[in-house]
Length: 224
Image (cartoon, rainbow, N blue to C red; front, side):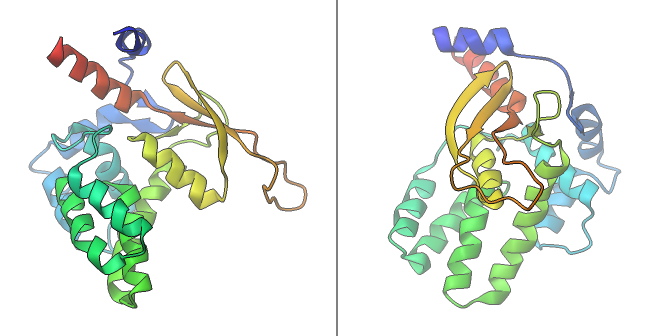
């Protein structure tokens, strides 16, 4: 109960977070007369349409928060089974469960990347590329959402899992985590961190988690 009280206290109603204008996104994806209508964008995304623009990928990723499929803290049995097989390097057996998870919600970066790995290891480069064409543009949406250097310019994520996709992509590891308001502050391990000459090592990364916290508050209200 105390934990949910904290969530209520830190809940914010602002719809412009870092570089992401959620009011704009909500309006665009719900307009059935627009080419940005969410079902149309998702249909193109499923096909890994290479003509999708950065703005359209932004609508696809952040628009997911307005979908009934958006459940940032739930883990299905299919996802548990996928990771069980994935950790055992049983990639062929894992794939059907990965597909089932993505039917539950296509905007799952953690699963999408590992599906890419599965097909790549099995030698199916065409399908691996298909997943890559879906995964990396979504990851780029997070990079474009801020610079991760402060609370004010935090990367905007829809799931805590997505923070670790960014860490993995940057080759970083976290040695601590703290929630400051609606921002996850990750303390970055500097010991084995590689940087280019003249650059400083990263000590902290900031991720705005307003949307996952919004979801928790809504669930709390339903179950109150």
